[in-house]
Picture 1 (cartoon, rainbow, N blue to C red):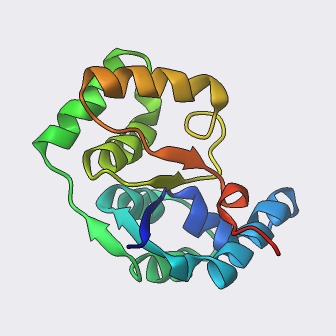
Picture 2: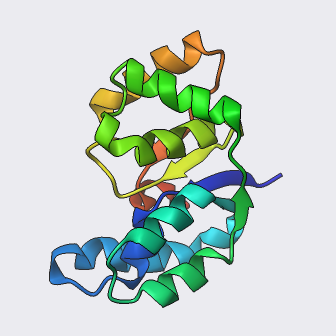
Amino acid sequence: MKKTVYLDTTIPSYYFDERDAVSFQSKVTKQWFAEESKKFNIYISVGIIDELDAGNYPKKDEILKFSFDFELLETNSLISDIVEVYVKNHLMPKDYQGDALHLAICSYYKIDFLLTWNCNHLANANKKQHIKVINTKLNLPSPEIITPLELFSESK
């Protein structure tokens, strides 16, 4: 059985990003899709589509088209309740409820990996323990929150 991966907004946006400042992340993201993505069941949510649609991206149409290639996970009132708990417990700032939504969806659907380049609010060692504590209280599993760099197969 394939492991599951949820893409946050940074993954499809960096895939198409041509700025020098994120050229490394863009290259790794493209490499991950070329070499590793078929080994996983990949999901997104309406939250990602909404964030991408609201954003100001030079290749917005391509990013959205790319994103629709993945299975869409639905949100519901239970996920909204989880987001509220995350914000109330300062797991995510109120201004970053999109990050809380991504994490809540992964936790609710028992996704194995949340793939992101967001190292401030998600792929952050200081956050991971806090996430596990809150999810344990909610009786939810915690996804591995990682960058594409951490999800390559071992080289032989």
